[in-house]
Image (cartoon, rainbow, N blue to C red; front, top):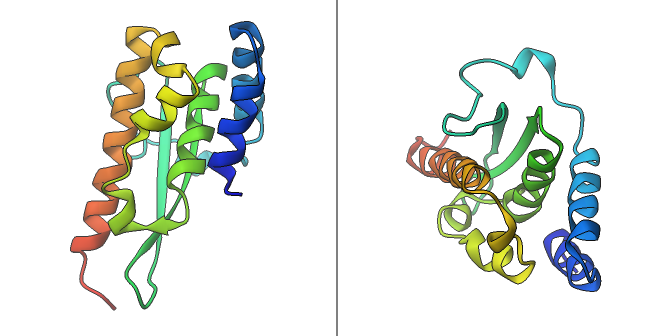
Length: 143
């Protein structure tokens, strides 16, 4: 079972939104430490009410570039959203990342209907950044 499938399954086991928010915050606590030197304007995601930083790492493979991501935020719930996005997108081929639609996942766990408009906009901004990094990796000349 993939990490994202495990997260979806865990959300489906929780009956109320207080428990789901607590789980979301716990997911954020599982993010790896974010390097201080990466907290820059270049890595900051524009369009988020909270401060959010995302860094992508590209690994060339015979079937095209794969991307891994690191992320962090100054807000607990947003850190949880980042954890879900990283489970969905990290260590995947750039060609796949460019077309993954997170709305299906967020719909299944019910988050789509329980995020404030500001958080929804921030989530969209994070997804746009991840997809842009994938498109950039696909356009880069192979080494």
